[in-house]
Length: 435
Ligand code: GUN
Ligand code: ZN
Image (spheres, rainbow, N blue to C red):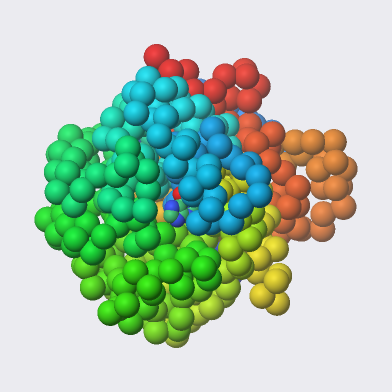
């Protein structure tokens, strides 16, 4: 069993990483009740409780948390030949136009959630489309599975096809109605979602800021400083603002529970401001490499003098994998290009408790401890012939973990539990038993 009791980037791995070689994790009523060495926990459990033994090559972790993903882009992953702004126009907007059809949206939502669970992702922070029903279908399907999920209707009133645009007023009204319907229902949370400053007018950002002030316990998500061309364009669109972050800040969109995607090209005062206001950055390395956006300097983001909350994101469909292991492998390479090394321990923190903290949910998910919600992933540490072979030469647990994030993928996910319920079982070839 692997879990974290704090932030290894700030306190060090020694103080925060818990590795229990032979563990039992017990759950009841959707929560973790016991965790610890099997020898001790076995004697504490009520008589007759069913125990599933995953064997000595398994690793139990808190479910992975994806802090930035677009479910409507699942059908257009791997779109060839464009960088961000062209990619949006050529591929993304045409794909999102199809979501006018509610049942099509539902079918994509189901595929999306199934892929999450096959990859051990139990929570994500999701962009839907401009259509309010794209939020309804995603939440309806997530609710059936008992998943904790944050999502929101994209707000977009310019620089997008007519059929994908709302207005400051309709976007506000529709989001407000969705908040009333979904926010805090079971495990579901609403994220106010102005797509980015490029597709929202100042009036729309103001309306989003007003809505967030009225519903401060919602999340707020948007994109920031992803590519250099985008940063230059935002400067033209908002000439009166000091920089990209100031565009959002000016409209009341900077604070706790804000999750900003990317942030590769942010400047030092902007990182300081993110720290000061308690906002988070989502690191999306597979997307950044795929679109050629750049390489986030993660160690700069989390530096001790003014750490910014950081989580991990797939950013599907610019991202190239639902696997958080694969995503961590790319986070390692992004760090290498900055002449830094991201240790496996730090990486798994980022995909679990770090991402939970970015979303202000670390009191409920992201780690394994009594009272926490029972979202778990069980990894098979010998999931392919090559990994099986390579593991014979691993000298310690850190190397074993690093092998997984470098070589493994969805095949390593043996089982996924959401609120204590088995929602993916590799052995039974069952994923998401949608009722
Ligand atoms: N910036 C604005 N919209 C998007 C999007 O859908 N994906 C990514 N990667 N960046 C964006
Ligand atoms: Zn994105």
